[in-house]
Image (cartoon, rainbow, N blue to C red; front, side, top):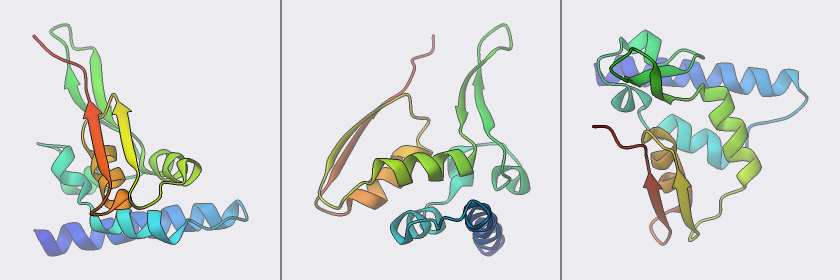
Length: 124
């Protein structure tokens, strides 16, 4: 499964890089590396691998009425946000509203000397 997930993850990041290229831009190397390193499917439990590595957001929690209350954001949006944030190694980051995937990417970008504190919505 890890090999299949890695292949799907690589294909997904290649698609994001292609999208960036159509915009006349390139995905920063650090963001590319982080996204190729962090396994997105671990933050989308119970979701088929192909769906976890699609260009779509993935709903991860619903309330008692079936309304989505948490999701793993669309990977192209995540890439764009990380690009714009311009995270540097050693930084300390506070993130509000993370289901975990973005926090894991931020941790990868901040490196061993950085830190990420992430707070998500609570559920009863």
